Image 1 (cartoon, rainbow, N blue to C red):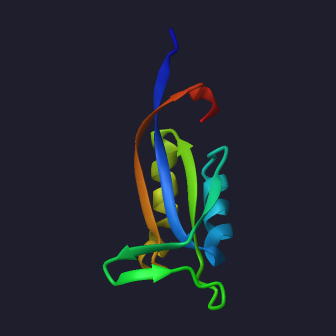
Image 2 (image 1 turned 90 degrees about the horizontal axis):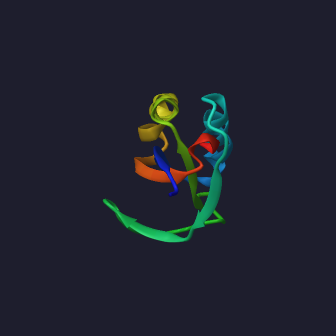
Length: 102
């Protein structure tokens, strides 16, 4: 039987200009990997939006999976720029196979 372990899946919606800041924070807390995917449009409290490469405000999702302690350390590290730079950070429990990799 395959065994799973619980980890935190973390998604951070950010402007592309902040990707290095976010991935540096992921690396700093010891999370072993991350993935970046483009985001082309969405709708939030202020209404609809679309990526804007001309203005430099195109958005991406930075995705990672980590143990609880590292996930909380990441959230704490990014807390100062969540509001000031309009980042959205979500996390929830997921079950993973090969938990030692995360």
